[in-house]
Every structure is written in structure tokens, then in C-alpha cells.
Length: 294
Image 1 (cartoon, rainbow, N blue to C red):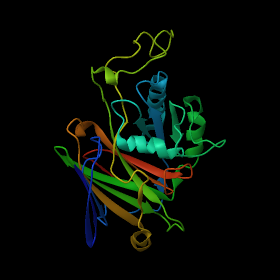
Image 2: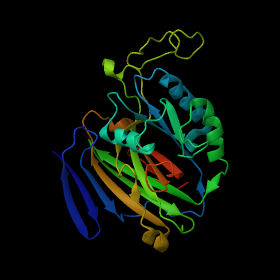
Image 3: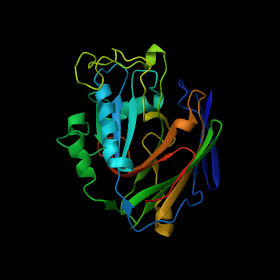
Image 4: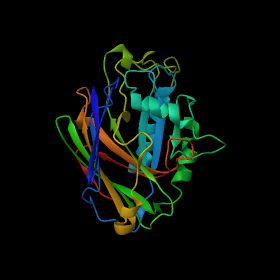
């Protein structure tokens, strides 16, 4: 029996729900926590890449390679998250994202969303299309909203503070979603081995590495969604008063997660998980660190 606790400034409600997988650990969600940093007048535009993957999908290794290549050139302006399905890294939460993001239909895998931006009636892109979509998302160097993140952990108990700041008060409502990702997820267990269609393709980075690739290193792996999977509503009353809204999440992580290799990813977006949930901006920080607005 897992327990989910939602705490508001003057009201505490306790919910109890049965969960089948360890990604649904206790979470306290507290609104109106202390400010992380002063709100600037402009923010660096960043891009969220949500990579849909799984160990049984034999073209997934090249998505991972492309992400690594893009990070080398874009640095922290590119924020990748690998969302697994059908393997040992899939969770109830990741499956919910898969089920809802495309109105109940799985996207082509492997593929990715780029700021959940739609083009040609689709929000899913093969890796050959990523550069064009990322360039479009980063067309402006700065934007009018951004995020600051502060987090700490003691054993497997972690606290994450996320502030969403706005240079101008928006005339519509937005949500903030908070992911926890883990790098270097690997195991000799066959359930972590990665299918590899490129094993016999000479000159490919994954040539002669086996099919499947044993003890494959999975990076940017979505481990936990601290917010609701469709995001938590940003309190626009707070934005009107002080140009930002701040939420704190206290999470009891499963024992098989390694906090030292985890990152916080947070992003501002239109409400929901459907194709109209455009991402306005994103931020990431290593768990146990502070990332101010930038």
C-alpha cells in the first residue's frame, strides 16, 4: 500500500491508493514554498526532447547516439528525457504518458517530441528530423518564462523545489511538470539489454556490439514523475503578486534508484498531455544542486 500526500498552505489531505510498481512512491506536494531565486526580466530558451524508447526497439541506440551528439553542440539548452515502455525501466507513470500523450495510441518507437511542437499533424519525430525541429524551438535565444530548481537528498528521501517565473503575467493558464531522470542505468540482467539492428552495419557506432547489447548504458531515463503526469497547475495569483509560483516535492525513492546519478527536469507547458500541451521552456539540474533562473 503506497501513500500519496498533497499538502496545501492551509489544508492537508491524505490519499491512500494501491500501486503496482515502485515508481509510485510517497510524494508530498507543497505549494508556495520559499523562493529559489530572483525572477529575471528574460530567460534562456531551452528545448525539451522526450525520447520514446524501449529495450526491444532495435533502432533505439541511434536515438541515444544522436542525443549525445546534439548535447555536445547545444550543451544545457537541450534537455533530453528517455521514456521507456515494455521493459524493466517502464513504470506506471511512463506508461500513463505513453497512453495519454497521443490520445491512446502509441507513437512510432523510437521517436521523440521536441517541446511537444506539432508539425504536419504530428508531434513525434524520427531522429533525422530533430535538428530542424530543435532549430525552430531555439530560434529565439531568450523567452519570457523560465524555471529555477533546488534539490537535496538524504539517502532515498529527496526534496525538490521548482519555481516557475514569468517576465510578464500571462493571460492563460499553464502547468509545470517535474521529472526525475537517471543516467548510467545498466545491469547484466537480460531485461536491460538493448536490441541493436546496427550490429552488422559496418561503420555504425553500434557495429559489432551485439544484438542485443549486454549491460547497455541507458541515460536520461525517466524514473519518476514528481508532479501529476499532466503537470501541476501554476498558481497565477502568485505570478500576479511576485512574478513566480513555487512548489516543493518530497519523495521517497525506491531503493534501486541511485540519487547520485539523478537529475531533475522541469518544464512549463499548456495543460494536459495531449498534442496541444506545447512546452514554453524547460530546466534541468543535477539532484542535490541549485540551478537558478538563467
